[in-house]
Image (cartoon, rainbow, N blue to C red; front, top):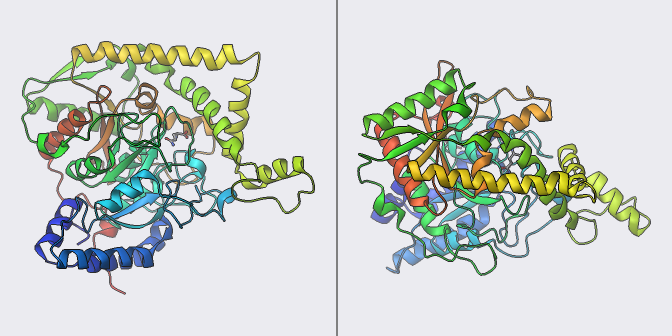
Length: 489
Ligand code: GLN
């Protein structure tokens, strides 16, 4: 069962090859035995998922209509709410916090009979690129346990890569779905900003955050996007468009289409990641796609713009963690000021504190114009450049990451870590849909990917190009050897 895609698992369930309860207990067992090596999960919600599976089996037995995700096990990043379960954001601050409501994505998944198995590890409050900044545990890469799975959604990526579940959700503010997808050889998708509701996702940078899926096939991405990509009245930035039938449009030919590459920006890009990027482009050429050059000169400012805007937004979003309303309150506090100071001092880790300081600085009077407003202006220029680029091509291709997965503890310098998102941040700044698709393994047996970015709202187009690429690459047995085995309690 672990080798099956979500699509195939659902088919097997519909045909009666196994029950939903059998699927749920199979994957719970797999997690229990294999997650000791990965540390992908923070919380496994066994009783709840077994109950949902039994309800689904009864429903099927009665011949009632069955949902689009029927019998598909799914994991959620631990910054997405499930009512009555903990949401820690991998922070000490929220170690005692229980979600009082369901996120919209949680509701939509369960309404379509998906089976939510548990919550996955992340960098604290989704700030990081390695999942090393979790207050609880370090997640490992299923292809090489001494390497990082990337971050911040490293738990979801490792869970899908290690075949502990066929689907998982992450959140992507600057690359946190696509970079870990690339490191773990999975498909990772950040939808158009506003496509998926952020209601019930703990906010980091609200103008950048987007929930999206990890899977082992593009088809599975399309399948879950049909379920979660819906308008939501509780998110004021939700796009008021009917969900599309992505699955119906995957198989048409790409003959005559154009992929744009900003070659000038990629001048210094070399090594095995560049070789795989080239392989992806060559595969498109073989499919009859023309590769054209596009100008995206503002891409070089992505990182500075992002670390001004995302920290500014984070500093205001995280102001709610004051020791009064949510999570931990310092036991040493003996005055109202001390509650704020000590709760925040004790509750947040260093990376989060650093970002709150930076964000508060760029928003402070006297500096707001020099940093925050200027960054907003450059963001607008970047959006316009993409609009121009899409007059010349259907899809823009970029690498997902500059390198394959790095060793755990090998990047102590935060600025060095920030460079991980060189190629991913632009999609968040411009609100574009973007997907990372595996292209192959290097001589160290580590995965490499290519990233495809579409114009705003062209989610279906990104999936179509990705599906055709995936099919043409035909990567056989793309499963980490350590996890390509049956296990039994
Ligand atoms: N790695 C980036 C950061 O540290 C992106 C994080 C994210 O997308 N949540 O902010």
